[in-house]
Image (tube, rainbow, N blue to C red; front, top):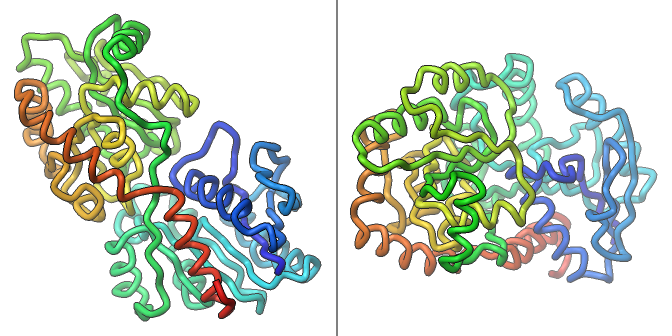
Length: 377
């Protein structure tokens, strides 16, 4: 069987949530199913690290689709021609976009509908394109995949999609994440914060992640604490980051905040394992991979009580209202001062993280793909 996959978000050193899902599931799926041929569609020169096995054939079709007009041209002109030319039996798209101009069965992964809930966080052209086309993609696709029960219910409610058409495939956590020994923790803290403990945020710098609220809460925490604690912000800037810059400049304790930008996976594992806690307080999230990564690393988690996060975190995290600066600051103080509470979160989180593996994600995604074409799995 010829399986064509949209891999335009497999970007070396820039794997955000969707790219991570794509990478981790495909590298397992392609090696687990050598009897099938996979054609990876890239919109720019690709990295060989993403050609996982001998049954993967990379194909490049430009131009790079990074603008709504180019999205449309790529999915409605380039993709249909590629599917026809490659004699595709199935098209898998993991970034929420599909093609309205092909009759090839499509399995479409829609991670969340954040653009419907928070249009103010996006450029107007990007919001309009998703608001206009994603409902049509959802109806066109033979089968839908999403990463949480919350997102499944959201798709059903907003787009009137039948539950029977949607499969939930949770994200996983890499086995690279594990608790660090004390000497390793000291080494990491020595490198980044001159030996001081630190709270950690991991994710793209954009309004939906509520970094302005996190910075204000951390400033409040610093003024209430007698010990110097730092905050590390790990991730690349995306869009509308001026508010983050203003909030940082207005802080009394701004010198304790460190923006690292994106870091390699090996470095992220070290940063996560050496953190005092993960502080992940977005306004909206379809899943929240950093939550389970922190759990696996033996690090307590402070996260929002909104959207999908209670489903992912269960009873193993400290929940806060993302709009409440006081709640976020109080949670930081509780983690810092109450070692017994933090220890309970760590033990519970480590156990819960075992439920999320990329092997399981790849298996569930494959089963959904086979349902798309009614092929025995």
